[in-house]
Image 1 (cartoon, rainbow, N blue to C red):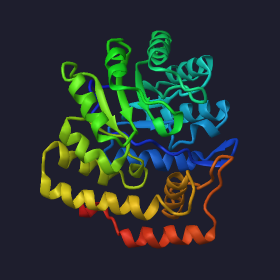
Image 2 (image 1 turned 180 degrees about the vertical axis):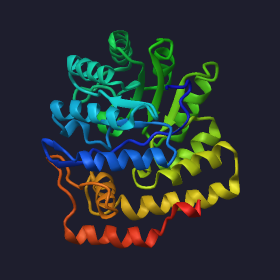
Image 3 (image 1 turned 180 degrees about the horizontal axis):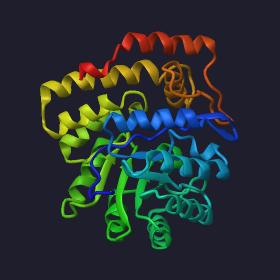
Image 4 (image 1 turned 135 degrees about the horizontal axis):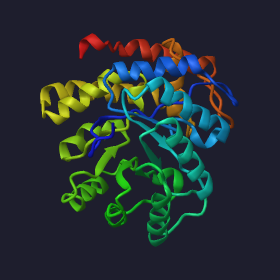
Length: 306
């Protein structure tokens, strides 16, 4: 199932929940089926968009099980195992392998920021004990450390480390990765921020892990295809829609979690799933929800337009 490199749009799926200990299984089925029908190249669960660090280990493992059941090997399933505990990362990885996932994703351990030499040792130790291949996850805004390009190059020599998702929103950083890894065509380089995905693909990156693909998967798949084919006229049209989504849905209220709240509220308004947020966060109140509803209507994005 897992091509090298992995190309296309791999949505970082939100986690539909009814309460802190209960998944919204019906919502999860609707969400994943919409993504797959929209042409995505895989799904990534238990990442930032999935509120992984706010969810109990029992719920995380249930999510892995249900996601693999619903996806049923139609596309690759990537599972986030980021944790401050090495043993808990291995435990999540074991569950992912047991239920049929295809790969794992891990950001650096957070709280105490490791140095680059420590990162190299940590990731090699982790990868050597994992039952599935590993994608690195560069998320410096959340974990307080950048996986430096030279560190990525060093780690790419480990046969069980097969790619990286970059959410730094740093174009120069991504260009350095492409340059340093130019002799390793199988190492996957994916972009997190959807506003930069087209640019990254044009530079030689392999695709996007874009939160907006929870909402409009076919739009982001079309964006990737236009960039891969260098169809600049189509790309300009689609990039405008992507930026409109970003500006109208992700910045409501002054919360670090505004993006996730916005995506979950929009999905709920679209009849896909619950908009419950795991503690310590909470879903938008009525006033903010009304702003999302209006902005969602104003977007007027239809699959037939692509």
